[in-house]
Image (cartoon, rainbow, N blue to C red; front, side, top):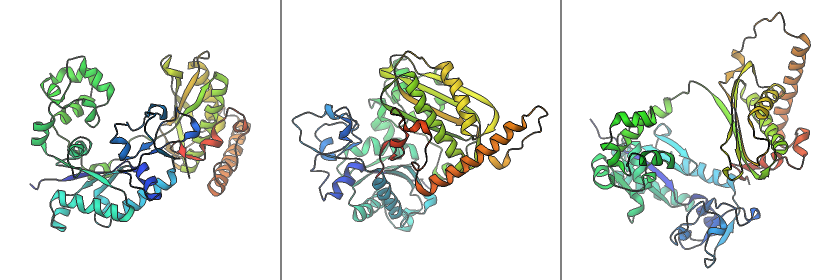
Length: 424
């Protein structure tokens, strides 16, 4: 059986590199930080240039954490520009690789099933990676790094860990090399899909590396992690049966939509509810755009400085709907029932769940239904459909509910953002 070869290609310090290229600066020699300085020294750096990383500065730090003796320039995030550059890079990939063999993992990272292309281009895995990385650089001026592996997991780990320690920034791992070089690697959080929470739970049993996971009683791991233990065990051994074709074929059994935001400052209960209503409105608009209705809702409220654990919950709806008028009442009940009214609020998350295509909804006859209410719902639906049409044509801020003009509201600002950052 032919050995499978996968690649994971990442664009080096993508946002910062795009800003450097725009300024005709070398990102490996220029100290540049992508951040919104208008948010003060507490603003999080969205990205830093490779030159700053070489000085020991950590990505996603706050501006005040950058040593004062380091001189740097700042760039406001331009998310629309980054998305355009990312799309152009994807177009570069598909000049060499079929879209069926590419899985975009994020705006700056892709997985590629390279197996068949080694024969087509008569190249080794490393030579093929170099060819693709050069094509990206020639097109955009953006440098890339690559991980090569005999499965998707090993390709990702080769990118995240191995590529950092070789001069050409191309890592390679098969199961044998994985055993030989990373069995005792620390911290475990360097390994894909092992986050701080899992690491902390493993440490309870004295497990600090991959070898520790392999040596541990599997029954104990299943007791601790449930079905997730299967992935932890497989990855400890370097196994990953999932391929790009499986990802492409996957279809979720249930659908959901969500909306979340970290508030600009601490909000009291009443002001946070204004923002919550804006988020519910955005969800109802998105449901209408997609022709979907919800049968359940969920909500989580996070508090300033984690002074208390998040609150919230979920609820099954008695109707299938995308109407703001109905969703707002259901969320309001959940918000008032579960939220601590005396603590400062900093994060809000809302979701609509178990979504159904609107055309598949069949309304059963109800002898006790209120004709007047039904007529009002139909009127509300027509209004909501008109609002969607206007927003699609003229932008999200063309028409807003009255509460979005209150001082504490955030929708007008958020509608101009992409991913929470400047959308230009």
